[in-house]
Amino acid sequence: MMCSRGSITRASAITMKAAAPNNPNETGVLPAISFANLPTAMFSCSLEPLNLGHLKQLNQMTYFLKEIERLYNPAGIVLFRGVVKEIEYAGYCIPPGWVVIVAQGLTHRMSEIYTNPESFYPERFAPPREEDKKDSFL
Image (cartoon, rainbow, N blue to C red):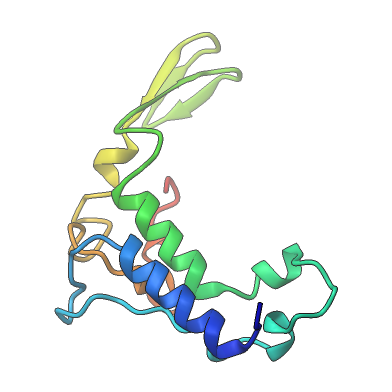
């Protein structure tokens, strides 16, 4: 197998284009993810195994995966969680043992939180935009 930076970039771009929903971003163009700015060492055929340090350098991949999970959450529309410690929310006391329903499938599509929430736009998670950090409950 021949390893080169170009072949990995092309293969990754093709895979991501195929995996991305057919939903153009705000510019009307399907997003492309480029690994051109990553260290060449990450793409060499060295004996060094891929590690967490390498993966942390893949910011665009992180944005892509966050956007896929935002639009197509593998957990579904709602989550049920048991309260283990008393909490207060909006002036209400929620005691241990109660079940809380988290509707992340709905909040992930709220225009009050996300700009054009129905659009596939991974860059919404990149600085300085970082829409996922605007609200403390996301």
